[in-house]
Amino acid sequence: MLPAELLETVFQHISHPPTPSSQPTLHASTLVSRAWYSASIPFLYASPLLAGANFDAFVRAICPSINAHVRRNGLAELVRRLDMSALVHNGSKSLTARILGRMKGRLEVFVAPQASFAVNCLAALSKCSHLRKLDLQFVSESIAISDLLRSLSHLPRLETLHLPRSSGPSTHLATARATSPPPPSSWPRALHTLHITGGLRDGNSTHLLTLPPTITSLTLAHCPHLTMATITPLLTHLSPHLLHLSILAPIPSLSLSPKPLNNLFTLLPLPHLLHLRISLDLLTPLFFTSSSASPSACLALRRLDLDCHDAAECTGISLEQVWQGFEWAEGCDGKFRGVRVVGIAWRLGWVEGRGERRLVGEIDELLKAMAREDDGGVEGRVREEEAGVRMFGPRM
Image (cartoon, rainbow, N blue to C red):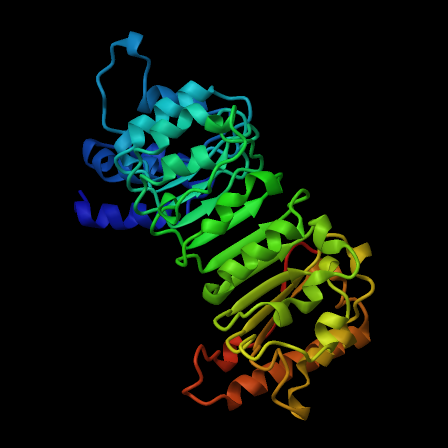
């Protein structure tokens, strides 16, 4: 018989990362012997892969019906990561609340389902005191940010939050339109990464202007209803502290001419920004060819990812125009002077022609050469083997 420590090492290797094949393997391991059961069961339930076919069996195991008169088996306490994003019409909102109630002691990551999560689940969610990451981006029912924050304020370890894609007026404002925004303490005190996607509107976004200075990573993506009336104060409020910023189309208010993000580094102080990911749909060549920038902007920028939502909207920007933003050989005062990694979305189609592939290769060589010449004392220095051009996203 293998020692328990060796069995745990084997099962940990099988289960990290979780794959469709690892779950059946771990389940089969629990049937071998009592020793194998004790060693493998924590890994089987730590991060279950849920789908419509196995969800009912999972529910019966972790939180059987009260009418079944089944004793608690402790399996719910083994779950560390619960991803219900693959479930659409499975379960109910009350069942989701009951599941969260059973897992409140140890749950660290929760991805909410589309149809079976609503405001009545917030009470159970607020008791998941070990939660570090909460993803509500798939939730279809409108949840007021004020109601959400009231629950999240009880989660001292929450670090990453994906806001729901739909937000309505606060329940306590049903009869009173005017109110003061919540104090900064309403946000979880450990929160450092925030993703804003979906149908959030200006009228329901006043809470965003009270975000704490702990926020170092912000994503704005697919926000059709947000206007510059919200986006500008939000970015101004957070810009001094941001390390990572993603702004991804479609965001109609940022697509209007003149495209305001062309002057991103002129309008905002971003002294600590290390990584910028931005959709070319929201830019013109002026973003790359203009040398204007605030004195404190771009000092730390090391990676620039060029994304694309609709390739037809990006045809006005060529690879040659992007290259003009990286002319370090002619001077070191450009706003992209510190960039050592450039990400290019496959969807842009910039590597299809021979000439474009050659230019990408030249950019890659220059980035590596600049990284090689950086002094060891450069803050946030990128090593030569990490520098260069990186292609990302789905191929065309």
